[in-house]
Image (cartoon, rainbow, N blue to C red):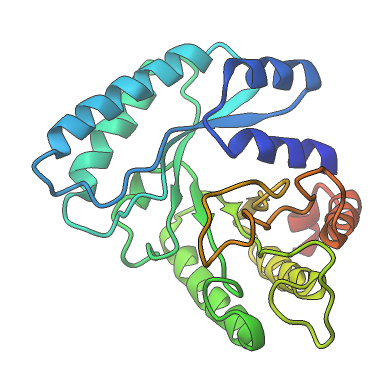
Length: 269
């Protein structure tokens, strides 16, 4: 089970290529294809051109992937800003187009940026299920503030409970960087101990809410990025190293995904 979920993650990390979809079909994996990031363009002079190009790219994606049984959903945007006035005018035709193009009427979603909250996000009402990218305990209230991060996370989730109206919610990104080999007690950010503590806290929040129906950790493995003060030779959020060797967190995930009952949320009731 863990291997299946992890590989889904690797596929989701980029725009899905035909070869990956064919592999998913052969391996019995499920994926949803993702369209690219659009941020801050919904009220600009270039917005009409952007929307036209976005529709064309979305059409190409659905035409390419609609006959693959491994594809179970469409993600139409990646972390757009969706709190401004032009959001609904931009989102509505995209979601309508996706529904019209797909003969199977697969569910539609988009990944919701950390700054788009249940009471400010103007795009979430178009999604058939809500997909959140959240980093409480890393980009928000990291380090010694982990307990405060858990409280803040619960506060946001209570807000989502009020606006979902029966729709499921999944997490499409969450995680912390861990520099392989770094250990520290008491735990500090970037250590293996902190990564595990963060994951245990985050999973406890997930398990508290019946409407949370999926989790995709970011990321399957470390990967190279441009250099900068926020990166140590790349993104280190992987639960495997760039050489595909397991970090401590991989064993935490294996235990979780091999022991959590499929009907866990029903059993809670």
